[in-house]
Image (tube, rainbow, N blue to C red):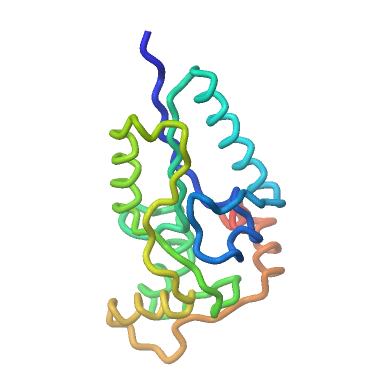
Length: 178
C-alpha cells in the first residue's frame, strides 16, 4: 500500500541557543539544543527522519521561528504584544529587547507547510521556512505600534526572566514560555 506522508510543522528549538548564535540559520545549522524542549524536538525529528529512511513513512520537516498574525492565538506575539496595543499600554517581554530575532507571518508559515506537502522529491529533509529579516525585538514590536496608530512613548519594556518563571507557576500558558 501507499505510505503515510507527513509534513511536520516544527520550531527551531532543536537548534538550541548555541545553534542560534552561529549566525543566519539554515538547513545546515547543527542541532545543538541542550534544554528539555530542544532535546525533545531533536529526538522527535530524528525519529521521523529515521522512519523515512526505513521506508515506513514519507516525511518532510519545516522549521520556523516565532509566528504572528491572524488566528495565531498561542503565539508569543499574541500573548505579549497585541493585548497591550489594544489597551494602549507598553508590551512586556522577558528577553533582551536588543537581541536579534526573526518572525514568520502565520499565513506564510501555512503556505510553506502546504508547499512542502506537495513536493515528494524533498522527502527525508528538514527545511528552514522563509522568515522576515531578523531584527531586534524592540524594532519589531515598535513597528506594530506604529502601524496600529498607537503612539505611546514607551512601546515595550523588558522584565526579569525570573518573573516569567514565577508567573508560570500559576499560569500554564505562561509556563510554556518559561
